[in-house]
Length: 349
Image (cartoon, rainbow, N blue to C red; front, side, top):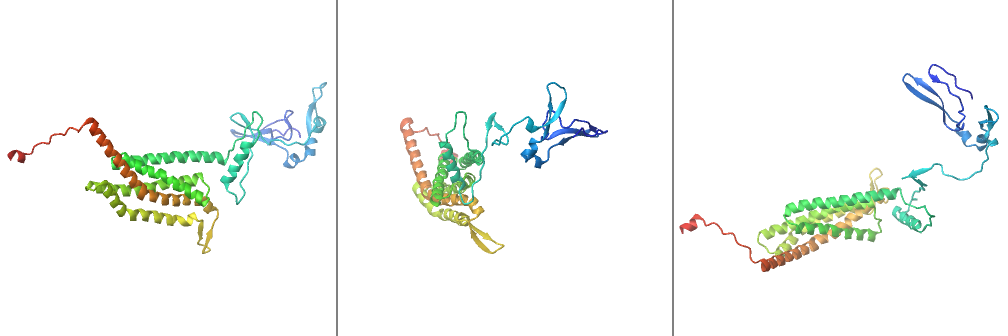
């Protein structure tokens, strides 16, 4: 192939360039259209790239040492070859050479379980000096998601604590409520282990955050009524018993309605309205099932906490506060009483 014909809109060029192999995509010329300039590139047809003999028959420019001119010679005349495996590309991450091995989990296998087996093999694998194995891909994404959900959960607890402190004007009562939220995690883990459900970082993390709102609401309903009864003059014990009896129904109704609404999702039941049939399992059940299971067991366990553990903690903290007040009186004595102003009617008497 010679040089492309020159014209008013093209810049002539020599093809093939002596320094470039002819099978590479190489700039042969350029086309100017007004102020815009476009490169004209030429490359070998794909069928020739796949045929080794065609590549060896390619003629390249070679210069004889005794002559300044170049002559086309076959590639096979100046090079030898052998078939061997190699990387299609060379990649770097942080200036380190990287070879990436990818794979997908086959259908019917749990992704987290397969990842755990892969991690075990990676830990046992022998690597020469200077080499290391690292699990990336979905594993990196899950770590980022886990960190994000952990921060979101802590921010959620902090904001709830601010609201509770402003509502109860106390630090002990918000502590009781938030402690019940943390203890509800026991129910979540127990439910996942009992049902054999894998701990999905995304959906299980979202379920824990949403569960915290329901648990806090039930505890507020109970303790707010306890404070109301104590303001009427009832003792701590009587106020806790009365509040437990009165608030038992709303707390149980909240828990039962939430659990029943999530039960179809937890057992993987899907309603096909177009075909008028009920199905069990499927991709949606694998995705939403862990979240529903975590909320169901977590809420059931948290309801017991609300009706039993929260009143117990309230009574214990109140006893500690009373002991502390008596200790302060013994050490520092009775606080000075502020004299009350005498009313005009009392002066007249």
